Image 1: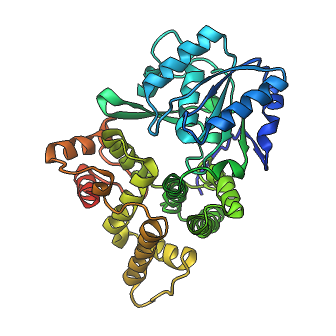
Image 2: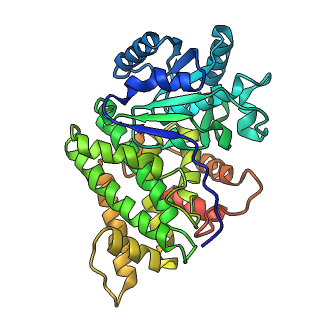
Image 3: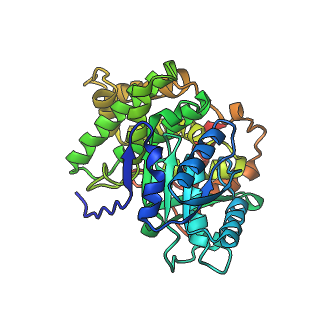
Length: 393
């Protein structure tokens, strides 16, 4: 078991109609003038209006900014920063999923900086406290509602870059599973795939003596597989949506991975995919993760057999661990593609006729920080990444 520190500063407020508490929560952090940040999609606008009304009744004024898209853009962040300064905003309230939350985090940080907020995504140190922010989550997936990270796109450079710092964690996250009922099935499936991938990234760990974390990940993976399938079969299943909504932040905020670190090559590779081709993050993960599994499983048969037997409940062929491992990978592919109905190849997302030069450029972005490999369990070189990307096309 490795040394670790957990700093979870975000309060989780779970419950039906929990958003009714948002004015009280904002005032606990001395908020008086709130920016409500959201996507502007038709299914979220009634909730935005309700939040405005709740804040107003509670004596808190607000303004709002919609227009956040998947793979959130730096241009919207800059617009939000300008609006906050103009309206003298002192609290940010993200109403939405991961893209809205990430955009809100960088707005909150950028308000107090005189330069371009993008600089924080390309290496500038966090040098001041951001505006306080909270979340009313409408989506179970990224877990960004409790994390210290964000990811933002700079579209003109096909760049998707991130930032990690404890100060950008939200103050609170309101989790009402009813708010996820209006999310379309494809987006719901993308969120389930993201939760699944977060858990797999840390399940596949080179740290061998972290049994508590291993068992927590087995339980969490069983949970997401069961309830992801349930919500795919019945989008109105509130019990399934409740389980997924609680699991999403726990899958990524560090609690489950006590004493270990994971692989995370799949996430690194997918961020380059969605940065280049603007595909949904969860869908990209559902494509790259099985390709990565097939590429590396023979080198880590113990973990892949554990996935097949402990998580997926398959029979163990003791005479052929490779056969057991491969059946586990096939079961995960069945889950992503037949149950969640996510695409198997990038071509199904409109990414076609990718020339070798473009693919090599995407590969190289995984090594832009001077690193020669990616992946905590199985270090991947440029040629390894190239082969996995080719399998995704």
